[in-house]
Amino acid sequence: MTVRMISWPRILLFGDSITQFAFEANGWGAALADKLVRKCDVLNRGLSGYNSRWGKHILPKLIPDSSHAENMAAVTIFFGANDSALKDLNPQQHVPLEEYADNLRSMVQYLKSVNIQQEKIVLITPPPLHEASWEKQCIIKGSKLNRLNSVTGTYAKACVQVGAEYGADVLDLWTLMQEGGSDYSVYLSDGLHLSDEGNKFVESKLWKILQKKLGSLHLILPYWMDVDTNDPESSLFKSCL
Image (cartoon, rainbow, N blue to C red; front, top):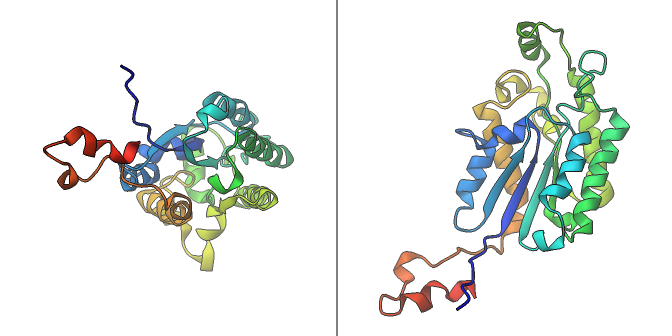
C-alpha cells in the first residue's frame, strides 16, 4: 500500500541576518508563519552576514530544479544591507553596486529557469541605516562607521530597478521607512537590524503583497467540526486529493 504524503505549499525567505532573525520573538517571518499556519510552510533561509555575491551561488542549492519548485507559493530575496558596506572599511561584505544589481538579476533569472515566475518573487530592499546608532556598534567592535545611509539608498534604488525590469514585486523598505521625514530609528534595534516596531512594519507591508499571491490557499485538513466522526478518513483527506 502506497501512502501519499500531504504536501504544504511553501514560501522561501532568502536573505541575510535581517531574514535569519525574522523567526525570533516578534519577528516578521514568525508573524507571517503564524498567519499562514495550516495553509503554507514558511521556510527561513536567512544567513547572517551574507551578501548577494554569495547568495546567488546558494539559491540553486535551495531549489535545485523545477521539481523542488512545484509547490513554491512565493520567494522573497532580501539582500543589500551587507553589500552596501563601505569597501575601504568592510571589504569582505562589500559588493559593488553594479555587481549587486547583477546578482539580483541572476537570482531572479534562476528562479524563472526552474519555473518560479516573477509573480511569485518579491525583492526587498535594505532598510535605511541610522548612522549614529550603527556607529556606536562599530566603535564597540573597534572599528569606524562602515556604512552610510545614502549609500544604502543607492543599493535600494538598484533593487527597485531590477524588480521593475522583471515585473517582480518590490518592497522598498528604504523609502517607506523614511516617508514624510519620520524618525525611522524606531524601526531599528541597533541602526541596522530591525526592532520590534521594524518587524511589525516589514510584516504588515509584506503581507499586503503576499495576500495577492496567496489568496487561493485553503486550509489544509478540515476544521475539526467538519470531520465526519463515522468516516473520519474520508472527510479528513477530501481536500488533499
